[in-house]
Amino acid sequence: MNKTLQNKIKPYIWLLPSIILMALFVIFPIMIVFRLAFSEVSKSGLMGGFVGLQNFKDAIGLPAFKTVMLNTLYWVISVVGLSTVLGFIIAMVLNQKFHGRKIARAILVFPWATSLVVQASVWNYIIKYEYGNLNNILLNLGIIKEAINWRSSYQIEFLWECGVGIFVTIPFVAFCVLSGLQSIDGTLYEAADIDGASYWDKLWRITVPLVKPSLTVSTVLNIIYVFNSFPIIYTMTRGAPANKTDTLVTYLYMLNFYDRQKGPATALSVIGFLVLCICAGVYMVGVMRKEEEL
Image 1 (cartoon, one colour):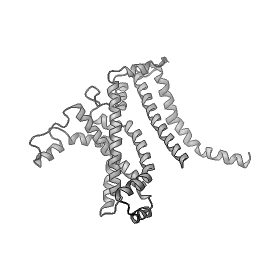
Image 2 (tube, rainbow, N blue to C red; image 1 turned 45 degrees about the vertical axis):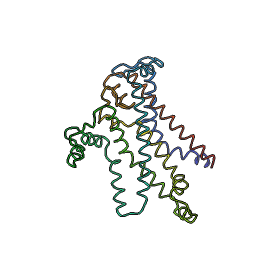
Image 3 (tube, rainbow, N blue to C red; image 1 turned 90 degrees about the vertical axis):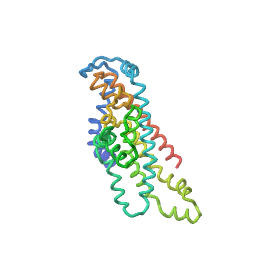
Image 4 (cartoon, one colour; image 1 turned 135 degrees about the vertical axis):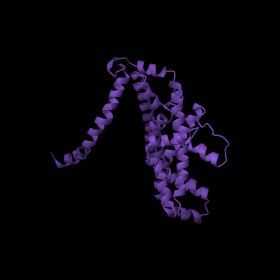
């Protein structure tokens, strides 16, 4: 074997362990799920013959399908959208020099580093009607005269779930944006000051364009993470009442393990996978076009 061929093969040899692990724990399970989605599946999980698109038809025909898909859309848009805006603002603040900045950054890590199940459980306790911390604080401060039922309807419960999702997602966005802010050359702002640029001019013409790559990466990753988020909704409501607060991930879990409708549940997982693939594809196409323009 000549040296040129060895140099070509060597990188693939180094990558071989990662490729094997990816095949075993990612590619192979995906192939099994796709096979199940197009096969008859018994309640015990045994795979039968090929049924074509029947599982997908059954999944789309489920009474809660439309509600669950709309909830998933609202969940992703609200959590990703608001956490991106708030995370950007917090990153701008933490990029400034002030006393206690390191402590503020450390505090910001806690919501992101803590288990989602723990956070959802804590928020469940905070908004309890009878002995929740929120009502106790407001009563002690004299802001309210009697306890408020913070979970009076499923719409409000879903809003609380979105709020918790935003709360735990903000730190990730903030630190992604902060890393982008710290990579900006300070001389650009100095030159803008000399030219008489206002704060908003510097924000929209220097900060946002240079932070955009970090913001784009955090947004795409957030869409994937939030779409697949399970602990918050399952811990707070388990989709109650009647799947009104379910998203796709929690619904297919209940459908599979509680209702034993494994065929439709597998079809829903494939639908979710394809949606995420489309999002990732759109992102990759956008990045490639920008690189071509450059």
